[in-house]
Length: 113
Length: 410
Image 1: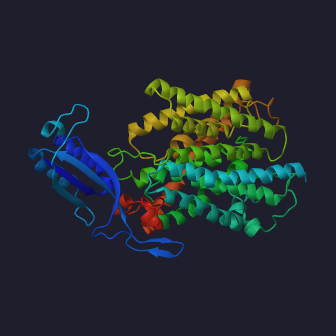
Image 2 (image 1 turned 180 degrees about the horizontal axis):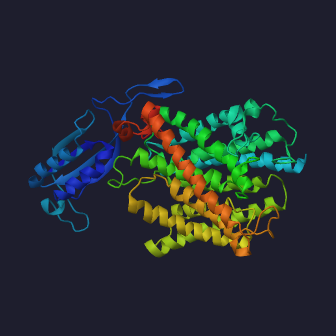
Image 3 (image 1 turned 135 degrees about the vertical axis):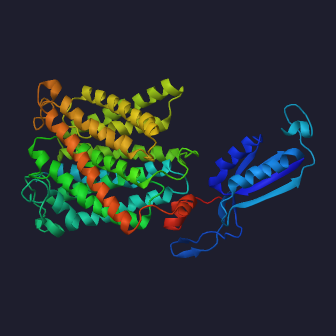
């Protein structure tokens, strides 16, 4: 089992969700986050005070999948979130030790989907 | 000079001012995505500042100055407010200072271009927006105000009735807004991704402030503290109430639940439709005008817009254009001299008022659309009116204003 964390551009969320759904991976958690990568952010000015390289709005997706779905999930996210410009984001894949469905008490790969 | 009249118009002037900022700014600001809310506020605020100055330099003279001869435009006798003094001018209002009439009208000149923001929200370049607004106000608003309200204006001479600006303010801006959004194109991702209003409480706040401001807009247009002002005030309470309820009931029937956004939108349609009629129709008929305006606007905003696929982002045309034209026609149906001796009898009261109303409702929108088309083409060729797609994606707040409305952390 793997835990996939993807940081993407906010406006790409609906595209990515569509691509994941087509890859039969409809379950995910989404949060609004701030981040800074190589894009460095946009200069903002507040009453003359310049704020350079401040944090940018990003969207974080978290998806727990069985091994078979790792490849398709990464493919779905990259193909739908890529614009080719700096700021497209990153995907992190982590090992997932255990999953439990609260309602039924199921454990492991049974509980994941 | 009458001090009671003067006091009421001073207050009304301030009320109409609040319709643009904060009223319209919050109404529209809540409807856009969070990355564009400051661009809406900035556009509203900038219009206030620019048009106020345009008005005292030459706008008032073009709109209300002595007629040039054909009823099309005022001449430049009042350039820089020359010959505009504190003494009342009988042509417009014999009981308040001429300067006060000038300022009251200034507020109408301000809100009219601001209404159009709804159609081009979230995608217009700020640097090109400024010359566009100045040209539009000069070439569309000022002549139209002269036709309908100016001494010697040809629509006024024809007997056309527009109590507070159904044609001059709402139909003109609404139809121009449609032309702009057709030329500017849809927002990137329109109909593909959800464009949810980012703060509906802002929209309800702005819509409510608009309604309060509208008491100055309509009742103030009586230009005195009198029976007609009171009558206009009452219809400005009643017609939008009927219209707001109508929209909610349609939603309840169609979708199972009535929404606050729908109720506010309906009330706004009722406010627009009663604007040309508020001082000419009786109170029971104002209910009919409110109900019909809401139903017609619902049709345009929900059915026709989505059917044709144009992106009138915040429904500037669907509400202001449609209800403005309907209200102007409805005035020709429901007006009665029993309400206002300075008015006329409409079709339902045996009069012929419908004819000048139809002429106004036809000619003014055509003129506004044609001139808006030309102004758009010129400004777009010189400066480019649409932001780059990347800037649109990041949002106008950061790319046009360099500031963000909300922080996520601290």
